[in-house]
Length: 255
Length: 255
Ligand SMILES: Nc1ncnc2c1ncn2[C@@H]1O[C@H](COP(=O)(O)OP(=O)(O)OP(=O)(O)O)[C@@H](O)[C@H]1O
Ligand SMILES: [Mg+2]
Image (cartoon, rainbow over all chains, first blue to last red; front, top):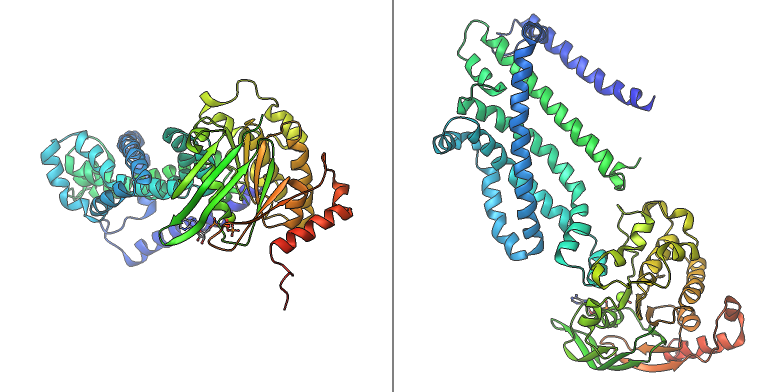
């Protein structure tokens, strides 16, 4: 019952968006490339569901692999940063530079470096999301209770034990929060990189090709946008479920 | 099983702050020594020095003849911090066995009491599978006591463990601590602000002067053992508390 009631407000919001969107396109006669009506997107989607489904899976795969690699590296780098002020101060400017440099600008260079195909896509997804995760790991690990740190030290716990038993669990809440940002970033990076890397498959490539196709291109472009958004929502939902399961002990999960 | 502690000319300076002036103190095996003194006089610093968590600026400390760092590495020190420092993701039972789980090669092969027995003793058997946030402050601190006692360490160091509790709970806790330690007989160094706590628990009280702390006087607590709650209503108890109050300089130099 509680779940059903908690869904009323968001569902109302989404329906309102779709209605205004559809109405605006019809009333103002907006050009199809600028904005396509939701009804037209649904028609296109049901016209060839298999193609969109398989391309969405390809993009999901790029996002997932990129995010996993990024998280692994961020855990190692973040642990080192949390353990040593020097490493943190040395790594911080590097991470900030990666974070603020527009990846849209250097994607071509990555493609030239890594050649066409999947590699530049996975690289871009991992590279852009890595600083976000690293900062999350550092902040989360630093939040470990100092009294608990002292307690662990009182029995001479090893660095590894401190990391595994105290710092990593303490970092989990921050990791889930940064995970949400990382998913949004990874999706944008994957979509854009697929278009640049001229991979045969993926929402980004068919979206990019559609922009030059005057007959039916708008339908394809907007349907890939729709599929990308849907993918992001599924990603966020998975993060929320993981948070519910793993963070039952955390104050944020209590009502 | 109990350890003796010896401090010779021990002092500690943090930058330009002298936290502890040169101090001599010896705690014979099996004694309960309370450290009483005004806020900021270096009580916590003294305890952390004995635990080997910070090193002395000058002087030598030995625990059973060895360096505190070695005593710590051999898990011969049971530490009870001021905050309960329970790990929120661990159950009560897992928290109580935390110090046993860490650095496990040094844990006692056959502890005299299991964690479950100790939890039962302090009245937490029904909460063994609960999470810390489901417990009251007094219950949390009882888990902190069990966690230290489970280690079977010959030396227990306690830093105002009951300071955050209300007066009634606090009184119950010192009664519980006395009974918990009786079969075990470990040496205890107990930091407190409370004169009744010091009187009920200890064999001797070291009264520290305001910062920089040094031992201003050592008071014998001439009360027999075993001690039971009724003792707190006796004239002998009152006599000791009055003496301690004078030693602390409360009411002595009125006007
Ligand atoms: N890690 C530290 N770095 C710098 N100064 C410190 C540090 N630890 C303690 N001090 C200083 O040393 C002095 C003694 O501190 P300590 O914590 O030992 O006092 P305390 O007697 O335990 O006080 P309280 O009763 O309030 O707990 C204080 O002036 C404190 O500011
Ligand atoms: Mg203190």
